Amino acid sequence: MGKCCSKRQEPQPIGKSAASDIFVFMPGYKKAEVAGLNSKHSNGGSLDRYTADPNQRGAQARADIIRPRPTPCKQLQLIHAQSMPQQPPGRKAVGGGGTASALVLPSSASHSQRANKIVVALYNYTARESTDVSFVKGDRMEVLDDSEPDWWKVLHLTTLQEGLIPWNFVAVERSVESEDWFFENVSRKEAGKLLLVDENPRGTFLVRPSEHNPRGYSLSVKDWEEGRGHHVKHYKIKPLDNGGFFIATNQTFPTLPALVMAYSKNALGLCHVLSKPCPKPQPDMWDLGPELRDKWEINRNEIQLIRKLGHGNFGEVYYGKWRNKIEVAVKTLRPGTMSTEAFLQEAAIMKQFRHRHLVALYAVCSKEEPIYIVQEYMCNGSLLDFLRTGDGKYMQFEDLIYIAAQVASGMEHLESKQLIHRDLAARNVLIGEKNKAKICDFGLARVIEDDEYCPKQGSRFPVKWTAPEAIVYGRFSIKSDVWSYGILLMELFTYGQVPYPGMHGREVIEQVNNGYRMLKPVNHPLPDSIYRLMLQCWDATPEKRPTFEFLNHYFESFNVTSEIPYLEPPTD
Image (cartoon, rainbow, N blue to C red; front, side):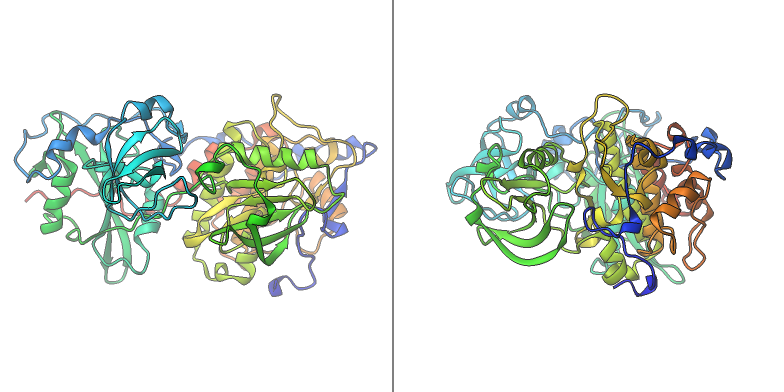
C-alpha cells in the first residue's frame, strides 16, 4: 500500500496519526507567526477569480437538486398516444431561471393530496420487517396512506398484502415518472456517467429535466464514432405552447412518451435510434426498516460483525450485516476515547442530515460498550485506499472530476445547513459502486449559529489538511473546510499522494504561515485551471476562498465547453 509514497508518512485517522501530521493546539503559539500570510501568498486571493463562467450551466446543474416544475401527470390520458402533428412552435420555449431548492423529502401534505392512487414499482424490494411488503419491478399497488414522508402504506394488488413500502421505489402509474427512461434527478455529467457504462449499447438513452428550462427536458444518448469512440450526445426537448414537445421543429409530439416512441422507431436526425433505456440506479434508503424510522436504538444482537475494515477516528470499523441480510458498516467507540454523550451527539447529527453524497446513519447500539454506530456500507472503502490500492489507481481524469464534483456537492449541503466538518480528507470520503462518493464523519462537526466554531484547548487535528487560522487561532469555519477540500483535491489528482511530501507537521505550519503552497505536481497531469482553483482554496484570507456552491458548479460544468453541445437534428 502506498508504494508511490515510500519514505513518506501515511496520513492516519485522528487518534492514530503520526506525530508529524498532528499538531496539538497550544494557546501560547505566537499569533504573530501568521502575520503576512496574505502578502506572501502566491495566490493573492483575488475575488475576480470567483466570477461565474458565462458558459456555466446554471444553478440547477447539480444532481442533488430537485426543481419545482409542472408535473407531467397531466399527460396521463395521452401517454400511449401515437405521434401526431401539433401547432408548429411559433413562440420561444419558456426559459429557465427557476430557483433551485435543496433536496428534501416530500411533505406529508403533498403526499396526502395523492392518496388512494395506484403506483407501480420501479425496482425490486424485499421486505425487511413484518410491517413492510415485498414487490418486484412492475408490480401495482394502491396507496392507502401516504402521510409518512419515507414509508407509504399500500395494498399490493396481486398478493393483496397490506404493508409499508419505501416511497422512492415507486411512481404513479402511467405517469412520466414511471417510465424506465425518465430520470428525475440527474445532471448532465451524471447522465454521461450512467450512459457510458460498458454494458450499455449504442443508442442507450435517458430523458431528464432541463437544467435551463423549467418546462423543458433533455435527451441524452450514447453514441459511437470512429476516432472518438463512445461518448454521449445531448438534445434539447422543448415545450410547445399547447403542451406538446419537439426536438426538431418539423416533428412535434403531444407527450414525452410519444416522442420517445417515435425516435425509438426511427432516428429522425438523431445520432442513433433510441435502442434501450439506461438502467436506473436504485435509490438511497435512510432507514434499516420502517419500524426504525423514528426509533434508531437497536439491539446489539441484531448486528453481525463479519470483518474488520480499518480504524476510524474513535475506534474500529467493521463490515457487517443487520439481521443477517442488510449490509452495514459498523463504527465502534474505544472505551475512554470520548463520552457516550459526545458520541451520540455525533450520531444525532449524522442522522439529521440526508443527502445523496453524505453517508447515511441507520442506527446506534449505546446501551453497553463498545458503542456501535451502524451506517451505510460503501463497497470500495475510503477514497484514499481506493486511489492507492484499489481500482481507483486506474481511474481516468474524467472520473477524478466526477468524484471532485460529488464531494463538493455533499459539502455544499453542509454549507447550506451551516455545518462544519473539520476533518475533510480523502480518508473521510467513501466510494461505492460506479465511483459513487459520499462524505463520512461529518458528525464530528458541530452545528453553528455564528460564523466559526472554536474548539476546546488541547484539541488535536491533522495539520496537513487544516487551515492556518484553525491551527493558530483554533477557528474552524466552512472556509477552513474549503481549505481542506483543496488538500483533498491534491490527494485526488495525485492518486493518494501524501500532502506536502517530505515535510513534517511543524515544518508544514511554518512554511504555510510564510506563504508556501504545494506546487503543481509534475508526475500527474493536472490542468492549470484546477491548480489555480486549489490556490484559491488555500487563500490566506478565509473570506476570499470560494464557496462549496461555486466549487460544485465548477466541477459539474468542468470541460463542458469542450464537450459536444446540445444538438439540433437536421430539418431536411
